[in-house]
Structure formats: structure tokens, C-alpha cells
Amino acid sequence: MSDSRTASAGTVLVLGGTTEGRAAAAALAGRDGVRVVSSLAGAVRAPSLPAGEVRVGGFGGAGGLAAWLRAGGVAAVLDATHPFASGMTANAAAACAATGIPLVVLRRPGWTAGPEDRWHRVRSVAAAAGAVAGLLPGPDGRVLLTTGRGGLECFAQLDAAFWIRSVDPPDPPLPSRHTLLLDRGPFGLDAERAVFDRVRPDVLVTKDSGGEATAPKLTVARERGVPVVMVDRPPLPDGVRSEPTVDAAIDRLLGSRPGRRPR
Image (cartoon, rainbow, N blue to C red):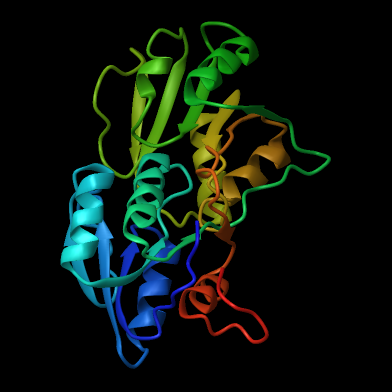
């Protein structure tokens, strides 16, 4: 994806909803001549609002986003959505390709297992359910499920007790034996130890979201020898690359990195 133009002035659309998206919006809002509009999907009740202007809701696919970009005179798009928001990233790539508007994707690095971790990497939530079935000691097995609200139907037929953590209540179908842990990160190490004390999980299931806000659960799983089923990230669209930090993404977006031209 080419972004040979820069957003040194004009409107920047931030596809946000993440900690990095809020940080990027705050940094861009402080730039002279830059108007920041953050778009939130609206999937979470009472989201934390970023600096600048905010819109909530979808665009109607890639075509709707392209039309919105043209109508709004957008100079550049910063995709700072969750690493698993693959549909939105695909739409952004297609819309920016159709309009010639620069796209920069911001993705925090994923997690890396250490020598004492017991991780089982899988490619999807459905595959995670299969992996869990093979790791449980029996019908008395206990699962701490932290993959969010989507895809929980994949676990509905498993004969185990589930503790499901999400910001908002998930929609059915859900496992017949489940307890909801409604909470919003970041989660500190002591808080995660308390959760493990309560749940006593045989398996932890999570997505490779990366970042520090939800990483302490991996530390506790390592401490207690709990196996982790880790869902890998979906790949980026062809021709799209990402920046790992807010500063790097903004530098590329604004074309201000010394000695480099935006690509």
C-alpha cells in the first residue's frame, strides 16, 4: 500500500478503539494544521474517548469508507484498530487503494513465549476450542477464556467449566457451564493472580493481542504451569506493512522521520 503523500496538514482519520489509537489521536491533535477524527466501532459500551473529534459506528464496508474519505477530504488514514480487527483493516486497505489516500497501520508487537511457557499456538478461535478439548483433564476441567465476545459459540459444546472475561456480556450460544468476569483492562499482576486463585484454571485461552495491558495473565500462567492456548493474529492484507509504535506510525504518517521518505 503506497502512502507517498503525507498528512502534514489536513484531516487524519484514526481507526481506533485501542490504547494505541487514543495515544496516536492525542499526539496528532497537538499538531498544527492537523484535524483528527477518530472512528470507533461501537462494539463496547461506554468506550474511552480519544482526543479530537469522534464518530461511532461502521462505514458500510470498503466502498462506504472510500466514499466517507472522499467526502471528508481526508489526507491520510491511521489504522490503530485491534490486531484481530482484520475486517476493518481489509476495508481500510481497499478504500485507501481506491482513493489513493495514504494508509499507515499501527500494530503493537505480539507476544513471544519464553522457555518456561507452555503455549499451544493455533490459527483461529475454532482451532483453540479443539486444542482445549485435548488439554482438559476431564469434565471437571476449568478454562479461563479471555478471547473477547466473538467466537464463543466454538466452545459451547465442550464439557468443562468456563470463566469468560469480557468488557460487555457476550451473546449466546455460550458454554452451558460458565461464569462471566466482566472487566476492562489493564490487568495488574496481583489482580491476575487473584483471578487464577479464584478460577484455578487447567487451561488459559487468549489471543495474541500483544502489549502490556493484558500480559500479566501470561506471567501468572507461567508461574503456575498452566498451559496457554494462544490464537495467532490474522495476517495483514497483501502489500500492507505495519509500524510497531505510536511514534513510528506518526512519523511515517507525517513524513517526518529523519533521512526517510514515507512509503
